[in-house]
Structures are given as structure tokens and as C-alpha cells.
Length: 172
Image (cartoon, rainbow, N blue to C red; front, side):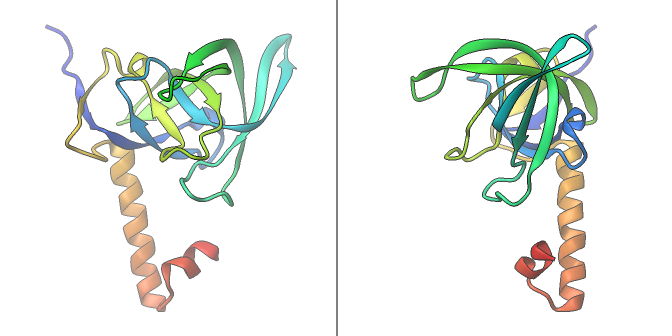
């Protein structure tokens, strides 16, 4: 008998522990995409111990360009990817760990500018295969999503005690 798969929603908060502290990203679970993708800019090829690596920056939170994570990851490949708009582009592919619903596993990410997109990250079907079932009616079912909501509620309660607005708390 095979192991029962966990169910996740169509969007989830995920952690990318290999890309630095605070690398928590709201991701869209996209079974139509083969490969996972992350918003990234300022890409720079480098070398570590004779192997190719990539340095890059990304904004982990939608509509927030102040929060920036500078990251490095092993460069796996460059692949031609056709986006949902039909345009094809050559993208860098890096490998890092993804933490989703309490499971941590390696994932390949194509890096591209996603400024105009609703989500900073897409999780494609290669990462999901054999691990998860996706419930398109639900959102934020994973342990990481529940922990994220708990932190937000705690911050809102603290803000309410101090009589400060959400904007004042996030700018502090």
C-alpha cells in the first residue's frame, strides 16, 4: 500500500531555507506548469569550488519591493521555457530546497522577472508529483501557511494593543 498523499490548496506559503533566512514566499500551485518558477533579478553567474552558481535577488512578498533577499544557489541548467502568454525565453535553472506542509525536498526553479504577475513563485507539477494532491477550492492548507497566518494574527493583536495601524507596524 502506498503512502497517503497530503492535500494542499491552490496557493500556499512556502519556505526556501536554502535561499536565506526569511525566505518565505506566497506561491501559486500551478499544475499546468511543468517546472517551478521564482521571481528574480540582478542575476550573476559565479563559481564555487569549481561548480557554477548563480547569485540573484528576489522580493519574497507580493507588492513589496522593500523586502529583498539576496541569494545564491547551484546553477543546474539554462532552459527554454514557454510562458503562459506563449512567449519563449531562455531561463537560468537553480536547485534549492522547498519546505511545504512540513516536508523539505529539493526543487528546481527557473528564474525570471515576475513583476507583473500576481505571485512571486509558481510551484509546478514536477515538484508536486507523488507528494501532494491539490484541492483547487482551498487555499493555505499547509503547516507553513497556518504558521504564517498565526504570526500575522499575533502581530495584528500586538498592533491593536498599541493602537498602531498595519502600515505603521510594517514600516517599523
